[in-house]
Length: 397
Image (cartoon, rainbow, N blue to C red; front, side, top):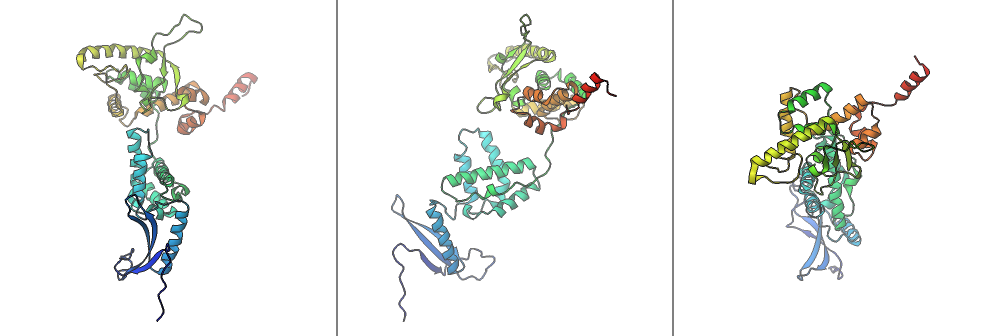
């Protein structure tokens, strides 16, 4: 009888587990057990032995998986547990990888990941493949916009990168996948001059009147308008100096978590059209009346646009009020606050023949590329200006 060879100290254990269930039980209903490989990683702080296990249908499968496991251990991936799932990796990133981000940013990231995790969240992270990610993105793209799919993929890439930094995985397979094209999103639109006139007329009886006027005539972002303070507004200017200083608004703040504007070039000082300056004077008087009526309930924040008690306006407040104004103006209720900014660009481009560089400066874009990409459907080409000038000077047809 041949003597059974004992494994040497430190070698991996490989044996057939008669009591173990096949990992693919639905496919192999009558599988009597499975092969099991065990790697000892020493002892933890409590003196308990730490092991990692791999499973396979055959002895050879287990040996191959043990080789792969040792390679990962050699790369320093000592925590690449077979039970650490994609869902856990994303939860860890949302909890620990977004330090300094606002609660809204974290909620948005969780919402973006939700459709992906519904498909691959159960999979062990070390077993996640690029085809798995691609299939999940394709399924998400069937009902979501292209931009949403891109955000979902980017969040997954960052979550796996966070796991990589914590020795949970060796390769970021999500970074290898290009996000597919999703459904068309809601395009931003611009109002016509007739619609603008109807909107301004209808807004006169609403508290949001000055907000609509300033947004429409200066193109500031809704997040900048809601954070605008009276100490950043000059309604009189100084017309006696040379050159004269008109009424202006300093766009230096936003409702973002850090309180600053979106980009460095978003911090800008804009001259106020007469219509906007007059609307802000009415707003200041109306707010003084609100302060008297509210009495001790008034909360002073120094905001230009605030509630009847002086508290900051939420984005939902602005949307509801704008819908009511649009309904009164009979121009449809599907307009969003951001459409006022798009309307400003449209008017500047179509009626003022303002170059795209100047529009980018007025709207606070970091470069003209942003203006051209986001507002391309509203920009009037300026290339024909040269032909018009030469025709006028040289007597063209």
